[in-house]
Image (cartoon, rainbow, N blue to C red; front, side):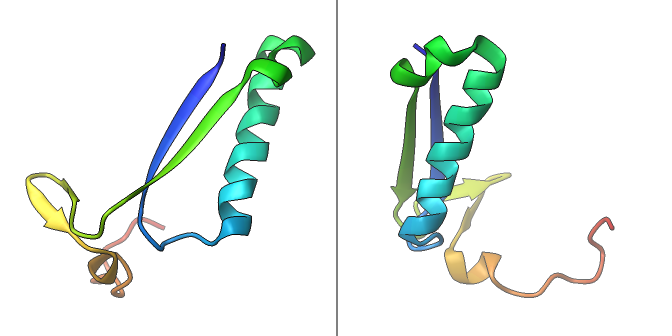
Length: 75
């Protein structure tokens, strides 16, 4: 059974956006494995409590992610 697990910051996506993740991920697996995969594909979208995750040893919050960048992002 194809399986995908997305962990996202709580409150960062609305229901329509989460639905889009599920449907588009399912379609991707169907492209790869064929139509037989559709009925058995599981996509899990989990919301992680704000401040309950981090990158590079630093705890991050949704507010931190929503701040404008420092101008050094890759184009």
